[in-house]
Image (cartoon, rainbow, N blue to C red):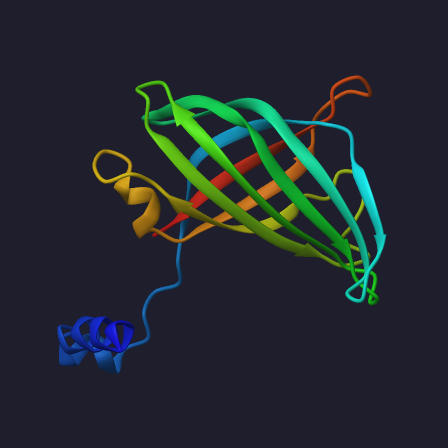
Length: 166
Protein backbone atom coordinates (compact mmCIF):
# COMPACT_ATOMS: atom_id res chain seq x y z
CA UNK A 1 0.00 0.00 0.00
CA UNK A 2 2.79 2.42 0.94
CA UNK A 3 4.57 1.83 -2.39
CA UNK A 4 1.41 2.62 -4.34
CA UNK A 5 0.97 5.81 -2.33
CA UNK A 6 4.55 6.90 -3.04
CA UNK A 7 4.22 6.11 -6.77
CA UNK A 8 0.88 7.96 -6.98
CA UNK A 9 2.39 10.98 -5.21
CA UNK A 10 5.36 11.08 -7.60
CA UNK A 11 3.16 10.74 -10.69
CA UNK A 12 0.65 13.32 -9.45
CA UNK A 13 3.45 15.89 -9.25
CA UNK A 14 4.36 15.45 -12.93
CA UNK A 15 3.34 18.30 -15.17
CA UNK A 16 0.79 17.57 -17.93
CA UNK A 17 3.41 18.42 -20.58
CA UNK A 18 5.86 15.90 -19.12
CA UNK A 19 3.21 13.20 -18.94
CA UNK A 20 2.50 13.58 -22.67
CA UNK A 21 6.15 13.21 -23.70
CA UNK A 22 8.39 10.20 -23.40
CA UNK A 23 11.16 10.78 -20.86
CA UNK A 24 14.68 11.14 -22.27
CA UNK A 25 16.75 7.95 -22.23
CA UNK A 26 19.04 7.61 -19.22
CA UNK A 27 22.68 8.62 -19.41
CA UNK A 28 25.41 6.85 -17.47
CA UNK A 29 27.98 8.65 -15.32
CA UNK A 30 30.95 6.88 -13.68
CA UNK A 31 30.37 6.56 -9.91
CA UNK A 32 33.21 4.38 -8.60
CA UNK A 33 35.33 1.28 -9.17
CA UNK A 34 36.02 -1.69 -6.93
CA UNK A 35 38.80 -4.25 -6.90
CA UNK A 36 37.27 -7.17 -4.99
CA UNK A 37 39.56 -9.95 -3.77
CA UNK A 38 38.16 -13.46 -3.65
CA UNK A 39 38.79 -16.68 -1.75
CA UNK A 40 38.79 -20.20 -3.11
CA UNK A 41 35.55 -21.28 -4.74
CA UNK A 42 33.35 -23.67 -2.80
CA UNK A 43 31.56 -25.94 -5.27
CA UNK A 44 28.10 -26.89 -4.08
CA UNK A 45 27.33 -28.98 -7.15
CA UNK A 46 24.13 -29.64 -9.04
CA UNK A 47 20.95 -28.28 -7.52
CA UNK A 48 17.38 -28.14 -8.78
CA UNK A 49 18.20 -24.71 -10.27
CA UNK A 50 21.55 -25.60 -11.86
CA UNK A 51 25.24 -25.91 -10.95
CA UNK A 52 25.89 -23.86 -7.79
CA UNK A 53 29.21 -22.36 -6.71
CA UNK A 54 29.92 -19.92 -3.87
CA UNK A 55 32.93 -17.66 -3.60
CA UNK A 56 33.96 -15.84 -0.43
CA UNK A 57 34.73 -12.12 -0.74
CA UNK A 58 37.95 -11.54 1.21
CA UNK A 59 38.41 -7.77 0.87
CA UNK A 60 39.48 -5.15 -1.61
CA UNK A 61 39.29 -1.44 -2.26
CA UNK A 62 37.02 1.05 -4.02
CA UNK A 63 37.34 4.62 -5.21
CA UNK A 64 35.46 7.22 -7.19
CA UNK A 65 34.62 10.92 -7.07
CA UNK A 66 33.86 11.66 -3.40
CA UNK A 67 33.88 7.98 -2.40
CA UNK A 68 36.81 5.83 -1.25
CA UNK A 69 37.45 2.94 1.11
CA UNK A 70 37.80 -0.79 1.61
CA UNK A 71 35.65 -3.86 1.12
CA UNK A 72 34.94 -5.62 4.41
CA UNK A 73 35.88 -9.32 4.32
CA UNK A 74 33.01 -11.74 4.84
CA UNK A 75 30.73 -11.21 1.86
CA UNK A 76 29.75 -13.90 -0.66
CA UNK A 77 29.22 -14.31 -4.37
CA UNK A 78 26.60 -16.97 -5.16
CA UNK A 79 27.03 -18.24 -8.72
CA UNK A 80 24.65 -20.44 -10.64
CA UNK A 81 25.14 -21.99 -14.07
CA UNK A 82 21.57 -22.45 -15.18
CA UNK A 83 20.31 -25.29 -17.40
CA UNK A 84 20.19 -22.80 -20.33
CA UNK A 85 23.97 -22.19 -19.97
CA UNK A 86 23.65 -18.69 -18.51
CA UNK A 87 25.74 -17.64 -15.51
CA UNK A 88 23.69 -15.95 -12.80
CA UNK A 89 25.43 -14.13 -9.93
CA UNK A 90 24.31 -12.54 -6.70
CA UNK A 91 26.93 -10.94 -4.46
CA UNK A 92 26.19 -9.53 -1.01
CA UNK A 93 28.95 -7.62 0.80
CA UNK A 94 29.83 -4.45 2.71
CA UNK A 95 31.91 -1.38 1.91
CA UNK A 96 33.58 0.79 4.56
CA UNK A 97 34.31 4.35 3.43
CA UNK A 98 37.46 6.17 4.57
CA UNK A 99 35.27 8.24 6.89
CA UNK A 100 33.73 5.14 8.53
CA UNK A 101 30.35 4.70 6.82
CA UNK A 102 29.31 1.09 6.14
CA UNK A 103 27.33 0.47 2.94
CA UNK A 104 25.68 -2.84 1.99
CA UNK A 105 25.94 -3.86 -1.68
CA UNK A 106 23.75 -6.48 -3.36
CA UNK A 107 24.93 -6.91 -6.92
CA UNK A 108 23.15 -9.26 -9.34
CA UNK A 109 23.73 -10.13 -12.96
CA UNK A 110 23.24 -12.67 -15.74
CA UNK A 111 25.54 -13.46 -18.65
CA UNK A 112 24.50 -15.86 -21.38
CA UNK A 113 26.63 -17.46 -24.10
CA UNK A 114 28.22 -16.18 -26.24
CA UNK A 115 28.50 -13.24 -23.83
CA UNK A 116 30.40 -15.30 -21.24
CA UNK A 117 34.15 -15.51 -21.57
CA UNK A 118 37.47 -13.73 -21.16
CA UNK A 119 37.35 -10.02 -21.92
CA UNK A 120 33.54 -9.86 -21.95
CA UNK A 121 32.32 -7.84 -18.94
CA UNK A 122 29.25 -9.13 -17.17
CA UNK A 123 26.60 -6.43 -16.67
CA UNK A 124 25.15 -6.11 -13.19
CA UNK A 125 22.34 -4.35 -11.35
CA UNK A 126 23.68 -3.16 -7.99
CA UNK A 127 21.52 -1.97 -5.11
CA UNK A 128 23.15 -0.02 -2.28
CA UNK A 129 21.94 0.33 1.30
CA UNK A 130 23.84 3.32 2.70
CA UNK A 131 23.42 4.99 6.07
CA UNK A 132 21.48 8.25 6.26
CA UNK A 133 23.55 11.30 5.38
CA UNK A 134 26.47 11.86 3.02
CA UNK A 135 26.12 8.60 1.04
CA UNK A 136 22.32 8.47 0.97
CA UNK A 137 22.39 9.23 -2.79
CA UNK A 138 23.60 5.65 -3.40
CA UNK A 139 20.22 4.35 -2.22
CA UNK A 140 18.25 6.89 -4.26
CA UNK A 141 19.78 6.24 -7.66
CA UNK A 142 19.69 3.49 -10.31
CA UNK A 143 23.05 1.98 -11.26
CA UNK A 144 24.50 -0.44 -13.78
CA UNK A 145 27.79 -2.22 -13.25
CA UNK A 146 30.39 -4.03 -15.27
CA UNK A 147 32.28 -6.96 -13.79
CA UNK A 148 35.45 -8.52 -15.18
CA UNK A 149 38.25 -10.76 -13.97
CA UNK A 150 41.21 -8.80 -12.58
CA UNK A 151 43.25 -10.99 -10.25
CA UNK A 152 46.14 -13.37 -10.54
CA UNK A 153 46.40 -17.13 -10.11
CA UNK A 154 47.56 -16.58 -6.52
CA UNK A 155 45.03 -13.85 -5.67
CA UNK A 156 41.75 -14.06 -7.61
CA UNK A 157 39.86 -10.78 -7.92
CA UNK A 158 37.25 -9.00 -9.98
CA UNK A 159 37.05 -5.38 -11.07
CA UNK A 160 33.60 -3.84 -10.84
CA UNK A 161 32.76 -0.41 -12.25
CA UNK A 162 29.52 1.26 -11.22
CA UNK A 163 27.73 3.85 -13.36
CA UNK A 164 24.95 6.10 -12.09
CA UNK A 165 21.91 6.54 -14.33
CA UNK A 166 20.69 10.11 -14.73
